[in-house]
Image 1: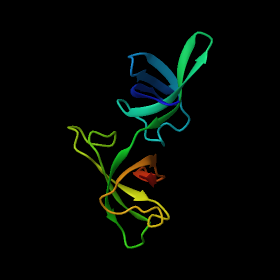
Image 2: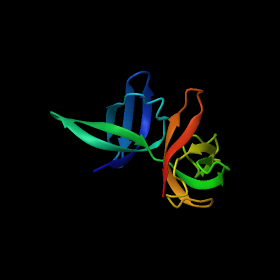
Image 3: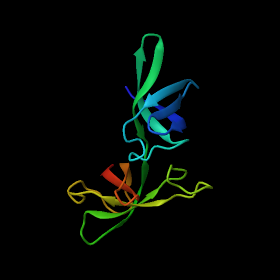
Length: 135
């Protein structure tokens, strides 16, 4: 079962450390952590794994939630207004607006104003985008 925590630090190329709800420091190694938009102080979900006497965080995933602000005419893209303070928010906790791409948006029953969760990825152009949008 996934646990919640915050990223304490990031070590280039390898992952970093997560602080769990009990204040315990757990190291993690996460492939493509940059592309998954993981950063210091992010609220994350993770699985606790044990190797001998040492606990580690695995499957570290950023927690993302917000509101669908717009849906484009194509019906599969638009913007999500993140709830502050989310990881992509600028300093001061102001909520950021992210573009999203979600095929079958109408069939999923999603519309402007809906509260949603999503996965944030870093595109090849270096822009954060919301995908896997769901309620």
